[in-house]
Picture: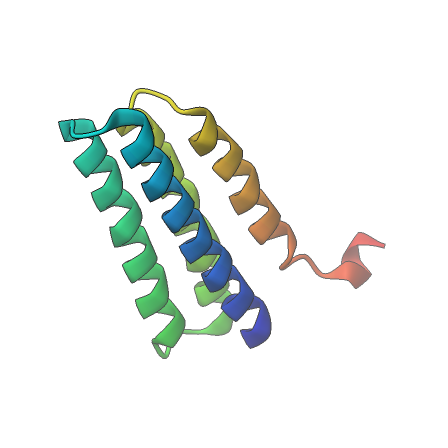
Length: 106
């Protein structure tokens, strides 16, 4: 499970980087740009701290998936909607699917 956590942390930071770049390129020097950047950076930091904390593995998995999911919603609301944020919500859904037990699905 630790390997899945690590991959999801990498995916989270990649999404943070993509959303930061697209926000800057789309909105320039506006207050909503800085609010969106703050939300995404804070998300990456919180998830990374959670990864290195001594919390139960299942609670880590839940936090690593749910925190970015909620952050994408907050980000989207702060920048008045964004197609990139909409696509990022599917990425967080994919992160959650990785934790499903294949034996239970079959």
